[in-house]
Image 1 (cartoon, rainbow, N blue to C red):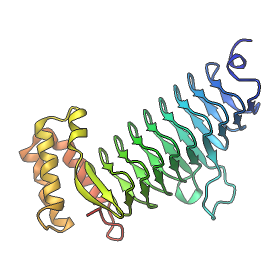
Image 2 (image 1 turned 90 degrees about the vertical axis):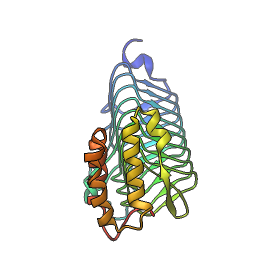
Image 3 (image 1 turned 60 degrees about the horizontal axis):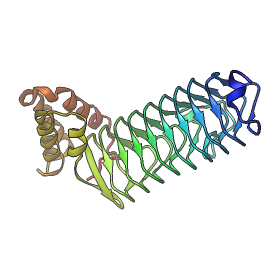
Image 4 (image 1 turned 45 degrees about the vertical axis):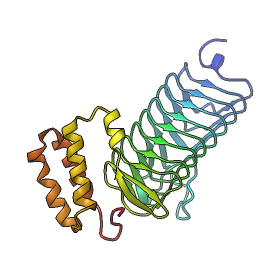
Length: 268
């Protein structure tokens, strides 16, 4: 056999309406629905179920027993054609469950590129996950959660609905995140509290000493000086002048804090 047929195990069930690149491989007993699109080089293991209006990009590795694109767990859902969109070069390990969005939340659940998603991870409806993240085993995020680039969620982390996690943040194992977590912050606990900034992660990503010094100053303003959030924002805004290399980092923090509501607040 040639083309797609040569790479699809004979026990797999692939709906004729599905659009799979000819280089996609599909393992035994996997089920792929009629509205699924899969890009070049993606490998899908055995016993996976991919359904709904699901689009998967290039060079992903999807392991056995995953469930992608299933109907969400929102009781308001009325069978609208909502979506799950997965980018390129993601690794999605065993028993992960990623659901389609809802009309009320914009209709799309989204996973970016180059993410490392370990076993039993869960993306609920309308979540938006960026790129280069790591979700350790059993990291679970509820509906409408936003996870920015380079975030690491420790094993068994649970994130409350509508929470946002800023870029380069990290949670400890077993954390329960009930409030927004600003960029660069490391949190831990039940409920999670801010413990430090992710300095080692920043060094590994090539942050200069000046940029790291600015992040330290942001941590001090947010958590060490007894300032209100509004006062801390003012103090952080002054850092761009004294740390010119960190101008983009300061802007990232200020933009995040500006979107935080009093009802949700930030981790403390």
